Image (cartoon, rainbow, N blue to C red; front, side, top):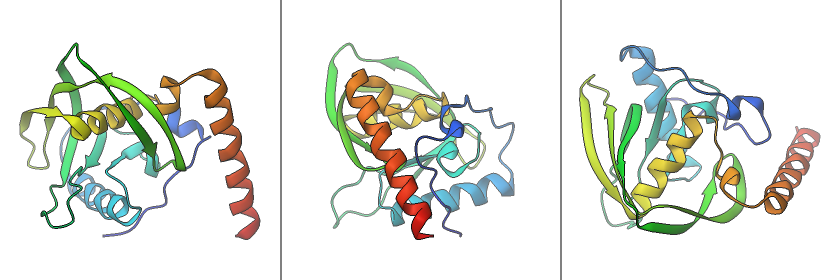
Length: 174
């Protein structure tokens, strides 16, 4: 397992539509393991492949917040939403590609999704609460959509300016 560098906004790779994965290979298994390790280390609850520079339809997530509970890592390959509730849920979202920046985003409160697991089998599951929010946030990444695309233009510009400044500062330190 290798920790992978997380791409920071603005970066054109974060706005690309990701390619479907044809089949689960050892490289895909290794990518998933690396992404889970990177997500936990960050720490975060989700990480999409484009955030580590891989433009493929895969993300990982684990929304277990209770430190006493065992982790529930999930790897979702070629995920798609089959159904979403009419009931909205607003959650203060963050993103590993936007360190320390948060904004309220409203999304459907519940979703049903289908994906391929690491065993190559199609799975279906129902998600609510943080799990539903995270799944939609990460699926957006696979479609080149960022959480700031769901907020107003003024706040979006402010976030982008802060990220440009952060990237400049980090480049100077390197």
